[in-house]
Amino acid sequence: MRASTSGPAVELSGLVKRFGRTTAVDGLSLRLDRGQVLALLGPNGAGKTTTIEICEGFLRRDDGEVHVLGLDPATQHERLRPLIGVMPQGGGAYPGVRAEEMLALVAACAANPIDPAWLIDVLGLSSARRTPYKRLSGGQQQRLSLACALVGRPELVFLDEPTSGLDPQARRLVWELVSALRADGVSVLLTTHAMEEAEELADHVVIIDHGQVVAEGSPTQLTAEQPEAAGLRFRARSGLDTSQLCARLSADSRIDEPTPGTYVLTGHVDPDVVSAVTTWCAQQGVLAEELYVGRRSLEDVFLELTGRELR
Image (tube, rainbow, N blue to C red; front, side, top):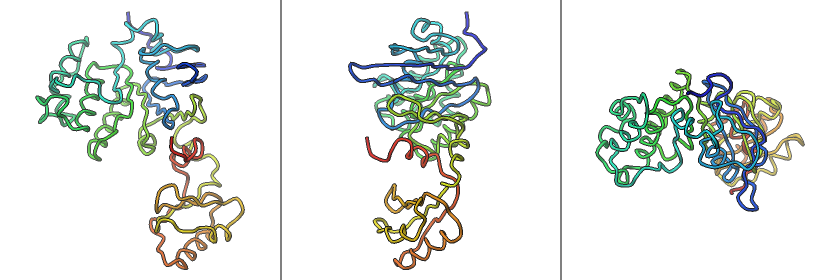
C-alpha cells in the first residue's frame, strides 16, 4: 500500500523536540507542497538537522504533528522508507566499501531503481567506481551520498547540506539535478548554509532560529520586503572607519562590514547617497569596487533575522 498522493509532501504542525533541558525544536510548523523545493535555513544549532531527522523517522518527536507523504514517520516508517531518499551530512557509507558496491547495495533495496552505472557516470564518479569510500575525496563522498539518495526513484528527497565541500563544477551539477528532480515532480527538502544556493533552487524558504520559524516565503518575497532598506554595497580596503560617512547620511542608515572588505549600507538610497559614498571613498584614497545598488540578498535577510555573531 502506497502513501497518499494528495496533500503536501511534508506538513509539520507545532513540532517539539527536546534533548534533556534543551529544546531543539520549539513549536515549528511548515509545509512543503508536492513537486517543490523547500530550503530550511538557520544558524548552527537552530534545529534544522533535528527537524529533518524527525521527518525521516530517525528521531521521535516529543509533541506536534508530522506527516510525510501522508504518513507518520514515527509509526509508519516501514511504509515511508521506500518512498524517500536521504542524503545526510557526512555521507554515512561504510569506510571500506567501494563506490559502485555501495550504490548497488542501496539500489538492491529499491523496487524500481535507477541504473547505478548510469548514475555514477552522471555524477562524475566513473573514475572512482572501485575506490573505497574512505579514499574518496570529500566532494566524491558527497556525490556518492547524493547518488544513494536518488537511486531508488524517491517521491521526496531530503538533502542536508548537499554541496558542502564541493567545487564549483560539482556544485552546479547538484543544482541542475535538484532542478531536474523538481521538473519530474519530486519534492525536495534541503538545508544549506549557502544563501545563493537557496535563492537559486528553492520555491519556498523557511528560516528558523532557536527551533522556531522567524520568516518564510519565496526568495523573492523575503528579499522584496522593506524595499526602502534595499541598500548599497561595495568592496574596498578592509577596516575602514565609516563613522564620518555615517554622519553624512540619514539617521535611519547604517553601514556594516559583514566580511572583510565588503561594506553594506542599509537604508534609503538615492543619487545623493551614492555620490556621498563615492566621494567619501575618494577622500580615503580607496576605490569603491563592485558597487551595487538593489534589493537585499537572502543573506542580508538571514543575518538581519538571526544576527551576525558566530555560534
